[in-house]
View 1 (cartoon, rainbow, N blue to C red):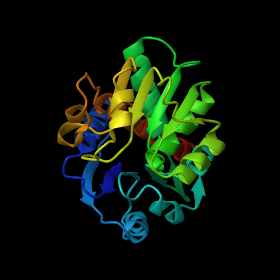
View 2: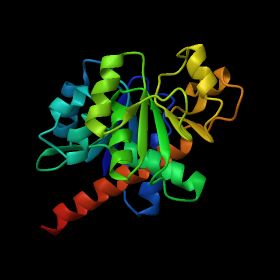
View 3: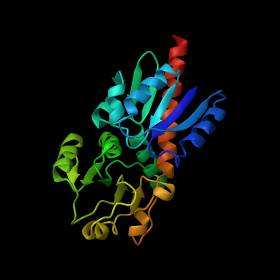
View 4: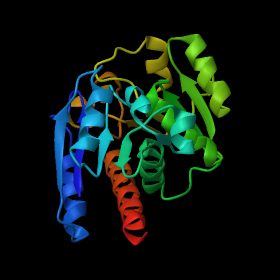
Length: 245
């Protein structure tokens, strides 16, 4: 299996390490590399990767929306989220997203119970946020969205049957998909003192949310590991399916 992660930046990514472990555990002779691909180059790079006999690739910021047009087929989840973080190069270029399941599994592991019927707030409305909201919707979660653009908040709320951020009663669980270093306003900083759990989808040096909050914040390592495993299982299942035809 010939695999990679593309995005900008990617030098911090733990995906190569994780997937090399998965390959060893599965007894597969394969490779996984990180390729820096700036915004605007995603489509051409994905098409080149197909020609270069890659099995698949992960996609990170800022390419998750851009590469939609490089895919011949999208899974229903990717269509709903308008986001792709996992691509399979088979007879067709197939795109899906595992960001949502990664977030859900990380939360459930921490809580040691299902997230069904929990109140979960998502900070942001971009590609990763939409994938998470789709997963929350499919698991009977009461979802809330915070963002500075009221129209975009309204759009994603309508799409995923969520509600705008309830400042008078903050959700019990919050997932931030905001970029590193973003400065939050005082009202939101106040609200984020009350949830039982706050997750920052970023990890390592890019996990900066805790610096603004005087409280514990769970960073995104567990989310990454869960979505990486889901991506690897997706590739493995489809490759085995092709081999059995």
